[in-house]
Length: 118
Image (cartoon, rainbow, N blue to C red):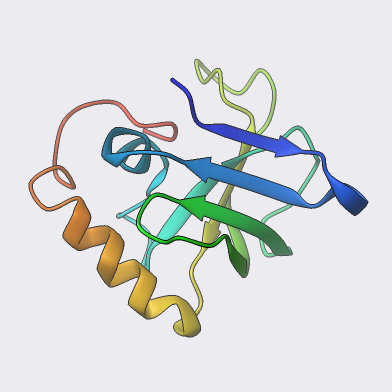
């Protein structure tokens, strides 16, 4: 899979690039009220932390500065998961993006294909 979540760049800003519908499906957390997105990172975050990251997504031409609360944490060695990272819940200001994502995933949101969190 080509998506990249990284803790690099200037000032250690988290960034996530989602290039297509398949990657979007893997990262989107439809089971979280208001929607959320999984951001791979090795940085340590706790539930409830406020987080900022840049989202580059094929649905938009420019990167989107995102803020939200950490609602999911996968640490290294957690169960069978290979993906360290955090699930960041969308804010009310991101409601339009949530709608756009769910429209793009119509027919896939209830798929039984594995995601990065389930």
